[in-house]
Image 1 (cartoon, rainbow, N blue to C red):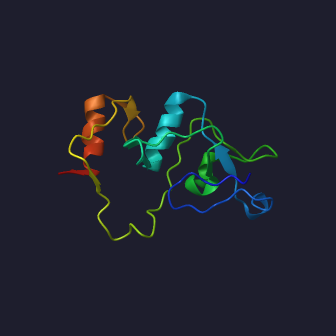
Image 2: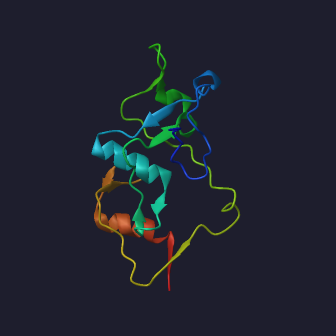
Amino acid sequence: MVKCCSAIGCASRCLPNSKLKGLTFHVFPTDENIKRKWVLAMKRLDVNAAGIWEPKKGDVLCSRHFKKTDFDRSAPNIKLKPGVIPSIFDSPSHLQGKSKKLHCRKNFTLKTLPVTNHNHQLVGASSCIEEFQSQFIFS
């Protein structure tokens, strides 16, 4: 099965010639704290569950979402440096120039999860709700 990048709007696929083109694919970290930082950086919501998207086993991000300085190129296989967070994400073309707010039901609630701010520092649940609340329009 061909692996596809999990980032919204990214069409990268892990094909036999991907590495020759300089494209690598990276599984989500097993460390829950770092994995949560990756998910928050992606700004991907799970519409079906009305919450933040959670990666499944085998989900990957491609190297296009990391800075060149995020990679350890000293070994034969290019790896991510420990603790790096993906930071390069483009808005999907159909959302560019439009409001990025999502319409939700009035009784929508966010799960209170331990999260980090843009500086990757742990913040409280109330800060999390305030930070993400701006992404929703409550009717």
